[in-house]
Image 1: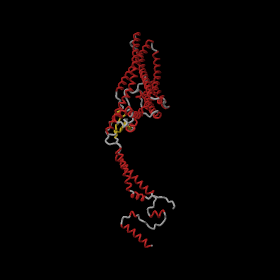
Image 2: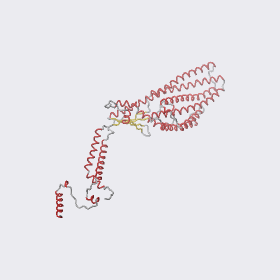
Image 3: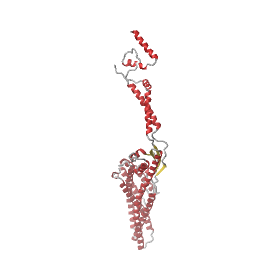
Image 4: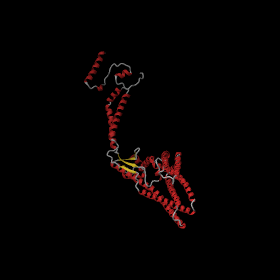
Length: 485
């Protein structure tokens, strides 16, 4: 017998399925029973949803970096940071203790397992909205857990904010005390000089010089305080970062932005006492500074995403703050050099005055500088105290935790429909495969096709003969064979 290509007739397949319909029905029934057992055994899972708004942080106690333009790119990072804080151990573990029951060994679910199976955070693209989904075994448990997580998150934010503002307050309190003493000493020297030299009124020339010096000295005072505060913030951040984080260097592009900012800050400082903030030159240099700062922010975000030693958003935020404070230190140092150059010019003007007037201008200047620093520190200290006691407002609850009405899983209708489809497909595939793989000859056509022999007669299956006409047909065939003999 020659090998011939085996073809599948769709009509034959249909006939096989019709013939085996009872077997298909049984297999489908088994799938439905298994699905029903799964639905009975599997406990329902309910999901509670709440919505939070994560605003760009702005407040009285912000660091000097709050003035940096182009912070829109940091909103996503702030969103991710807050999502990590929401899922931190300090927030989640108390929720597990209040809402979950111990197992047979008396152990509560692990923190990692609970986060993975119960808590999901999803930020909405191009918005400030963060969705928080929490699952539970009952609607009440899911709602309670969601509400406890949101409340714990807000409390944790307040603790972190108060700790940060407390560090700022402590730094400012220390500086206020030393500044107060400096101011007192400067005032004593001024008063003593006036008494000894009987100089209580100033000439117009001296007044003009002191007024000009006062403007520059105010800038110097602000520059000194900003530099100290940026250096203190940088020291705090380096203390919180691990060794790998502290060792990450910035890019060549970021170095260039630092140089540009420093040059622009020096240029702006050179305009002090010459142009007002409304002057076109001041506005032009301010716009350039804003553009460079925006580009610097993007570069910082790129470095953090590429080189951060940890996937933690909190760690990434610390690293970004490190680069920002380093840039601000460089800017304030460049500004200090420019102001020092202006100060030298003023010293030349003072040296042209009579000796008595020179002495007066210097002690008067020391007093005004000390007073400016003290007033500035006292103002920032009050702001820091207020910020420390304020509840953080960068996170707002848009929608409180919902009480779910229906479980999210298992989905009964979907489960039964899938079981029905799988049963029909599996049963049909089984019956069809069994029929096609059955190589027995079942018809006269199979004999003629595969054996290439004529069919002389057919012997019916006696077990299937249950009608009289079939028996009569069998008798007639037997009689005809006997007559031929």
